Structure formats: C-alpha cells, structure tokens
Image (cartoon, rainbow, N blue to C red):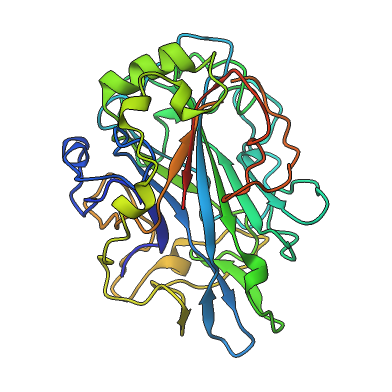
Length: 357
C-alpha cells in the first residue's frame, strides 16, 4: 500500500484510473443524491493501545454541505474533471502565520474539532478533547475560488479560500466563485476502551492539525447547475425541497450502494498491528516530512490526484445538505447520525446537505 488509509464515499466504481466520465458511469453512489457520483475522502482514525496495536475508531457518519457563500452570488458549478484537496496531512501544529490572501485569518482555521458531550464545548483547531460522549466531530472547509482554467494542480494552486474562509470575496488571481464545500465527520471515540494509549489519524497524526479532505467532482452538470441557481440562496438544506435534486433522491442509499471490497491487500479495519502504509507517527510541533511517509524503495504514501493511484472504493453510505448565510460554529446537540452542528439551523444559503451512514 502506497497511500494513506482514507474513507471514501461516492461513486461505486472508483479505481486507479477514475475519470469524470468513468465516475458518471458508476452503477450507484453511496450519496443520497444518485446524480452525484463525486468521490469524497477523509482520513481514518485509530486508537493506538498501550501494547502498540491499533484499533479503528467507529465512523459515525459524514455530512457534506454545499453552501451558497460569498459576496458574489453568481456561483459556478464544479466543472467536469475538477478536483481539490483541503488541509495539510503533514501539519502537526496550528500555523498562525500562513494567512488567507487579503485577510488576517489563518488558513489553519479551515480545520476544527467539536467534542459532542452532554454540554456544548468550544470548537478547537486540533484534536484536544477526545472524551466525547456523543463522538468527536472533525470539520473542514474547502476552497471556494477557482482560477478558471486548471481542473487540478498538485499544489492546489488552482483554488483559493474566500477572504473570510467560508465567506467574503475571491482574490483577483482566483476570480471564479464556486459553491462552498464543508465536511463534518463523526468519530466514535468513546466506543474505544482506552488504556493509556492515544488517538492517531491514518497519516500518523496525533494532533488533528493534519486532518484533510479530498474532493473529485462527479456531478451531472445539468443537475448541479440548476440546483445552485434555484436552491443555493433560498433552500434550508432539505434535499426534497430542491427540485433539481429530488428526482434522484434515494432514501435507501446506504443499502442500495453498500461497501465494496478493498482495492488494497492490507488490513485497515478492526484491530491491526500497524498503521496502513509506511507511516511514522509524529506529534509535532514541527511538520511531518516526506521521510515519515515513504516506503522502502522511495514510494510515497501521499496521494497525488494527478497520478494514477488507487483511489479506493466507498466504504460507507452518504447523504447531503445545501445551506447560505454564515453559520456560527457553536455545536448543537446531536440529532441522528451524524450529529451535525448545522442540522437545527434553518438557513437560506444551504443548497444541499448530504450525510454518510
């Protein structure tokens, strides 16, 4: 295995040579909306026990928000072949010096964690509190500004964040405003019988600062375009209230598009002896290095989406939510699975909210 162990959701036919056209030919999607054959990735979380073994932390579901944000309301759909990554898997501390262009806000604010306990707690930029009765929710904002020409660049320079991260304006270098993506992932940290060990993400990160997400567009353009136009600034997130999305709504998506066999010949689930891949566990504060993610022979674990590398199969089901005005990042009580900080907020900037089972 030569890449990080991530959890994938979306098109059922993801494979080493996936393209936009091949994703559209998928027989099903683990997304609630079957016209969305996109692929979504986030890292697996493990608990390293005191004896050195690793136990996979239960995945309580994922919610993907498609939000109408920013001063420019002429939002564009993701073009065919578009892909992007948000977050830095090498990060092991909060970088307050790297700022969003035209802003004093650190880019590191794109990642946050909410400990869902009996009482709401303040969200943190790292994995600080892991004693969470209702789970630990990892959250990440994606870039919403595109340069208008490159579908993907390995350094992600084809996209940029809005001046306010999840609101504001796009810089002149990236003038095309896109629908805003926001992921929430729930991890069942209190399902683990802790014995003095530690939680670690699949990229070897014990801090949470290296949390990241990947997106590979697989939307039917003739569905996403009218959905944005009709629902991004008027809907409250209910998929059934957005006319362009309703025809492909599948309430039984979790059963109709079940988990596929793994593409890699290495254990990743349950109790395992080591982290998948050639990963060295690092806790910072300095960033992890390429050497921490290189196998014998120089093979790197970092996935570069510009190369033909295994993208994996969906492993859990998934649905959506489309919100638009700025959301206050105050955790709300869990409601269903996954517990979402935005479930109880009636908003008119959310085109679509999708959950994963």
